[in-house]
Figure (cartoon, rainbow, N blue to C red):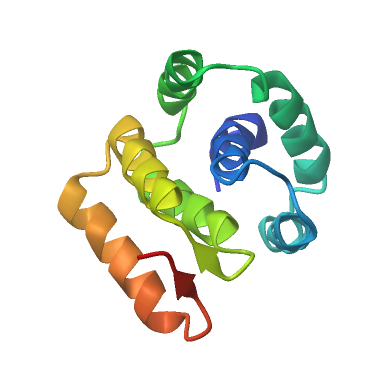
Length: 134
């Protein structure tokens, strides 16, 4: 991934706040992600971004993410969106608020609604243990 880990962490931090807490399932996902992306500083970078964003209101967070999205490497928006979805679902639960945030992230990342819907549908279809809030 060419996108700076701090930029990726901005979106991951927002995904963490989608359900209000950074739990053990999410921490384990991020550790695995850091290993897979070969970014050993990802955990620390994400912790810093969580602290930087935890007191932001919705508008401030949206502005923060819009600024970060401008620094996402070309062609990596869908990948970052997919990682955010995986992080939001690390606890095997997908709430409606998280779905709303997913589509807000897609918009900010410049991922069109059809592509975002395809990412969401594919993920939901592959994850047999996922509980979806109706």
